[in-house]
Image (cartoon, rainbow, N blue to C red; front, side, top):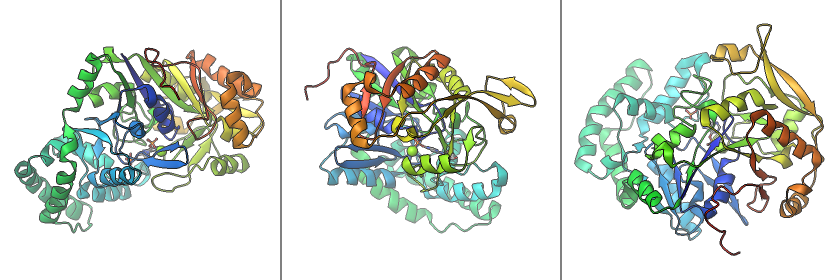
Length: 441
Ligand code: IMO
Ligand code: MG
């Protein structure tokens, strides 16, 4: 048995989907533990590209169980569109949705837009999927959960109370109109209930049962450490716990079941949305990396902000997650940039610091202190694929030195190196599921 958590160590979009898909081969169950369709996890399997929003990225292995944990907030409509897309590829997901996961309703989406507008400088630049308002309702105990979809009378009664209140909020506080009546929502969600009922159940129980049977469980985080509601750059993050502790509360397992916590580290920084980003750069290098890496939001199409790798932020990610391994991604994207820079400290109000400041205001006043290292040469994708087959010794020396330097700073070993988008473009250094041999090819 092994329980492995995968988290984003930066501001999201680190390449978690690819790493989860890769590791899912040896997992028996993959569990998404936070977020909803604000996530965009791209997985390339052979000729096919899949973009998952709610669906755990381990779904491409036929028959393997995938679980949407109680820590998630799910828009049934986008989940159903993902199920449809998979069915078109002849994949029937073996999906279990926690009865305790919360449902995103149309008023959450309306409120997300209205709140962002009103927040002015405090707006995080959300994905406008209703994530924040849905988690707010969860905490305020106004939420509707997947269990409620199975009990239409209960759903109707709860919606009746909440709908009236939400319409008042949208119209009276924010001065917007909200056209969807209670009956319309009821009809729409009753249709979703019919299609999703067979997937809803006791997800925490199922994961614990699988662990009791000594199975391998992969916990898939969405977003990244610096977007965490508690540990991120508040208020410029998301509304869930994106960090390793969130895997336990968001899936319903005890911390003693976790054997590894792998932080996915993109070898540069990207950020979609607002808030301070000390290592942000603009100009030729940023444009080149953005274009080469297709750094545009999977969800919203927004151009991502680009920056150098931030070791101060990574050290923080190491600590709040308890990282036991690093999965580096996008070595191929940063190739051709030289020198490459590592931010190893900040200067804040004339003082050098090596820990994350406590507030967004202080972080905004930080200027990075860089260490420069020689970059590595560009190569076509086919060359990188050959490198992946040959293994770590074939990786350009400069890239190895760069990754080693980061690993030394963090005192966390490297377990995976990704040098391209496909499953094949990966070098696995440490097996996080050592108890199970790989299936023969
Ligand atoms: P994956 O899983 C990058 C950002 C948004 C915004 C803030 C809050 O693909 O890494 P929200 O809609 O969650 O209320 O937005 O968080 N954000 C992400 N940035 N990757 C993501 O997911 C993100 N999900 C949310 O841009 O700044
Ligand atoms: Mg993404």
